[in-house]
Image 1: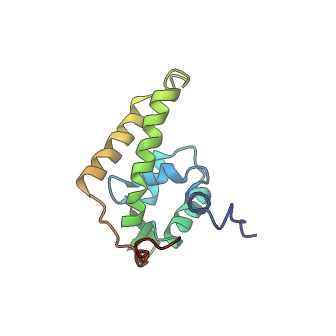
Image 2: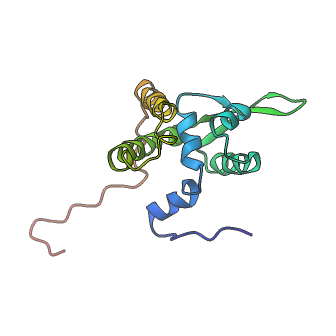
Length: 152
């Protein structure tokens, strides 16, 4: 059964339709430093079921955020990397990390507030600095200027 969109007219809702599912932003976080194999992602996200990881990667690939490249045919094995639009989401991941440290730092249990998460954020941050995102030109035309004194 296909998921119903949150709101087709709102870009935030449409983005959440793609990246708002549980685990999805953590996959993006882990792919920011570079290409990873499926089993590497499983090791980084040990509480995520393999079928869920596969499903999330498939959705990200369908929307052009992740690129899958096969490195073995028998058995089929793939490596995953972020596309330019996928890397653009890195600023959101880092903003969420900073927000969490600022507002949840004292509320996190010691098991959750550990060096591993900070290392992931640091690697993601370094990856964004190393690979700047290219700006995309707007597809639309600028609005026509109204004549001086004309009513709007």
